[in-house]
Image (cartoon, rainbow, N blue to C red; front, side, top):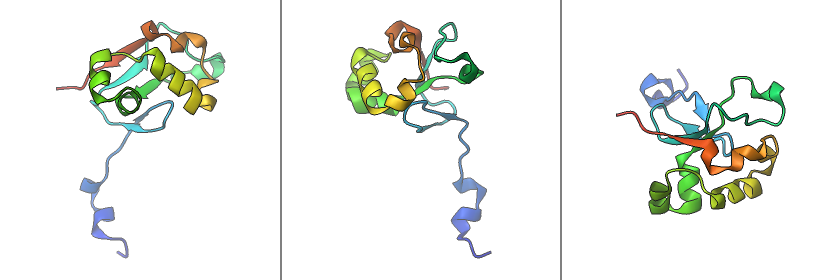
Amino acid sequence: DTLPVQVRSPHCWRLFVKFCFFSGLPIAEGEMHYRVRSSVVGFSHLASARGEEIALSHEVMEAVNGEVSAEILRLPNQNLFDYLKRQYSQQSSKLREEVFVRSSWEMVRPEV
């Protein structure tokens, strides 16, 4: 009972089950994001690849390319890949080079 009512109220909490592989930002259910196609082997070591989706938050795409450009591009571009390799080098080092090819990605649209 010592916790504020906001903390005790279940309406104030959100459960996230998906996160951006690079930034760690949460991706809400139904939120637009990008993911590596299932046909692409993304991880350098197969042991670490078991069932883990490589997702990219749309917020990262907007931060790198700008809001308007992110909407026009529709998929990650070389500018974004260069940024990810530079800013998230530890995460990027776990991935195969094929991940940093635009055709390896698909957009996951928001649910309506």
